Image (tube, rainbow, N blue to C red; front, side):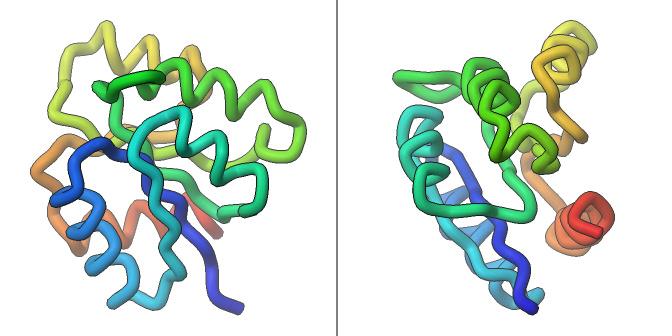
Length: 121
């Protein structure tokens, strides 16, 4: 059965790179442009893994993670943060919000796929 990954990032380039990398690895990819759009997508999708950016308009990654964790349907869905941020305070805040893991951009495609497979298992 094909696993679904929801990617949430305001950068079209990053969304396209994630789509290409994950599709090539056999995942079904659903994309959203920011946290608000991501929450809309979750009304109709049940992804196996979510990858989200932190810095986005309308609803940032922290707010998005908190909202996902507040929804019983998605409370246990693994969430990987993919961001240019690397400060320990931001990592701690993401963990407190409910993030499963942290990947710094630019991402290594092999490591990204490995991380997704690890948390999706």
